[in-house]
Length: 68
Image 1 (cartoon, helix red, strand yellow):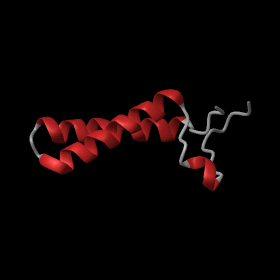
Image 2 (image 1 turned 90 degrees about the vertical axis):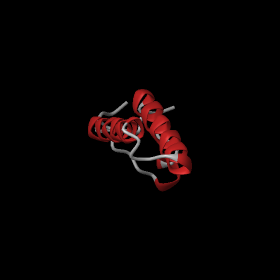
Image 3 (image 1 turned 45 degrees about the vertical axis):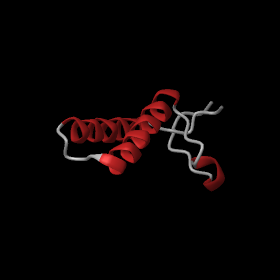
Image 4 (image 1 turned 180 degrees about the horizontal axis):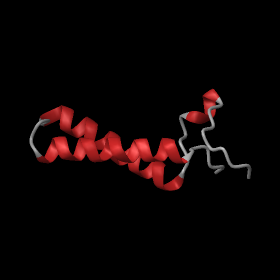
């Protein structure tokens, strides 16, 4: 897997995941919305830590500025 996510992209995904977690634990979101957003938050965290987003491949998006 080639890294295709830059640092700004990774930081924004982690911030979104934290925001979703805060909404869940303050009970601002519940039920199906909480499950869907929780799954999205987990995906955001995983893709941030591995620096690879599979959805970027078909569109040719690469936010990583470093050459490998």
